[in-house]
Image 1 (cartoon, helix red, strand yellow):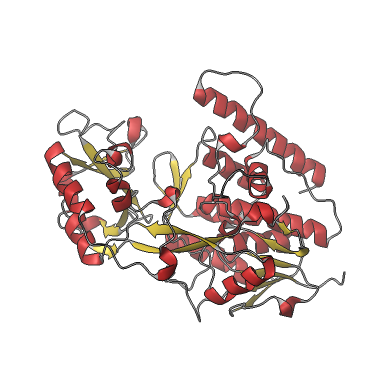
Image 2: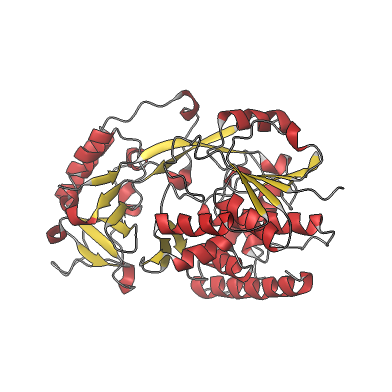
Length: 439
């Protein structure tokens, strides 16, 4: 095959990571991004790798699957992890970032790399690429025109699920007389906690389940994705459902009473100066005035200034097990790869990992090197196997979890010890793979 540029479609987390991994290995890249000329309904910034749903990349402990996956990405010299570590904000045991600084870091790295050519245009068909490699990283908010091109390419009907973004409030507008700083189980003091009594919760709950939602568009009538469920949908499933979800008080003690509150709403810092906080787990489709009214029933948020209201948008993903191999290649045309959330990996970290490995696979293929084998002893490899493996029933997006990784083969009763052992095995296996394949 003639050595031409590798085409990457989409400059989100997966696309930027993929382009970076290719370029750092000496492979010339042509990166397509439809912004700033055109944006999805959920994007507002002109920067690359814009975070929409949350500023958290979840736990940073290796006994947590997301923490393990991030550590694997660090070993593979991920650009997104470099950016996250450089722009992190306090979030207890989690890794959260200043969104604008995070995206600016990545945008600068991509723009300044001499082997990455940027094209600000929307891709609407694949015929222009002919015999060149193409990596589609257009994400869960793929444009209508590109979605139709993908549908024609794959011969598969598109699938949808809902995704939602939580509101962000100004820190100065939070009533700290009704709130306290703490992380669960005494692990720091990085969250603002908004306690509620039984009576306050009851009033809030009744208002929430009877509030007016924004009118759904045609493509939003197919269902709800469990991993990013709107808070009002969660509440509709039962009076106490929120108390075991985003309002759970477990592990928190109100210093004013010395007791565990009946319910707690947590706020997480959005930027390094602590001027903005998002309402954790409050992804919502409520109308904007309703958000102000209903969430204002939370005592600490009675006068909250909303810097961004919650929004809801469409996500698109492929029936990947029927279409892709474990190297993210389209089986009917191996010159084309898909990476990121469009493959059915769910979450920022998982999407980035997919882009990272997709970039490595494509670079090795381009350079005539053997493709590295990431097996399911590693979190990275387990995701590859999940999206390309056999499934029973309907294929659905998946976050990284220890359940899709290879078991230890021995019984360990302590769950944290068991997960830590799996993580340690994964990191050693990945180090061996990196050394063996010269990654």
